[in-house]
Image 1 (cartoon, helix red, strand yellow):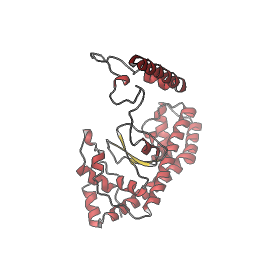
Image 2 (image 1 turned 180 degrees about the horizontal axis):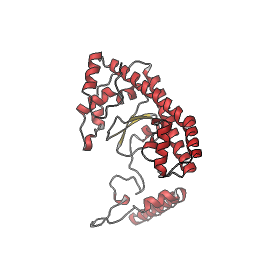
Image 3 (image 1 turned 135 degrees about the horizontal axis):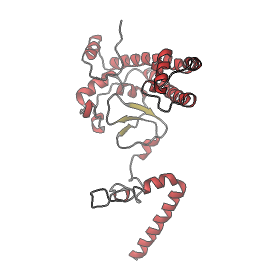
Image 4 (image 1 turned 60 degrees about the vertical axis):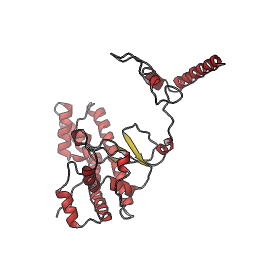
Length: 280
């Protein structure tokens, strides 16, 4: 009886493996390479088959009670943060174990988590890692003091999310245009954020990435592309900076900070504090 069950299980496993390979051949081939192997200098086999946390079959994840939360609108954040790294996600994205989620669609909460005030607080309350990264582990985030700002803050954050999405699209479009029109495969650090560059700086960055001179016609094309594609992103970036300052003011008010408190916060600002205080 035992042998029959074992053979049936093996047959079922082979059938599922064939179905997996037929449906997702590239993925199956990639995972198959890590199914079972003996690492250099090791004695025991390692690989996906020998994990303790796989599901019924070696290619499966273990059962998880909160998979459904990944399908919902949520706030994602990195476990290792050099800057406030909280984002709104509504496309059902799954993450690895270095990203946590908050099962919330509250944009006002997102504003608090990304605020200068919360970074100031977290710098003094969260564990510090290599290179002074912060580690907002789940159990510590649960204990953070949260005061939600006024109701219209969510609309400001929604506009900020729209701008961020548009800016990412502009960056990708410019990189693609440079690749096709100028043969630039690796745009370089300056061109990773073209909205920070005026026309002259944009042309200089392209010249540097291309490792050569530009003709007058090419400079003209770059100027036109900057005006049509990059300049609107520059205006959007300026709008985003103004929105971030307004949202920060709302968060500070929610926590009852006085102007003197805010000034003290900026005088004692930790490294990589987001935003900037208003001047004038």
